[in-house]
Image (tube, rainbow, N blue to C red; front, top):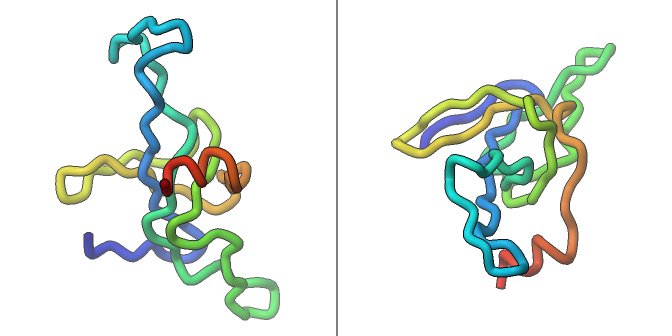
Length: 104
């Protein structure tokens, strides 16, 4: 993908949740909500502060994040669905547990 977000925007790829419950019930696609967890694919250079200096973002490519249900704008690039959102729409970075499982 050749896309570079501007300012304090990031490109996020949603992380798919499991389609089976702990009890073994398979959840159909029509009943699932879109996940609110994703992986940062690209980041912009940062926003400018009052002095005109660029303030770097707190997130980086590869971070797993949580974001609001209605955050971002959905786009399709190279046939893949992504979200473009401002850094302020990100609630936090997932560290350890879920991120470590996904890397394994």
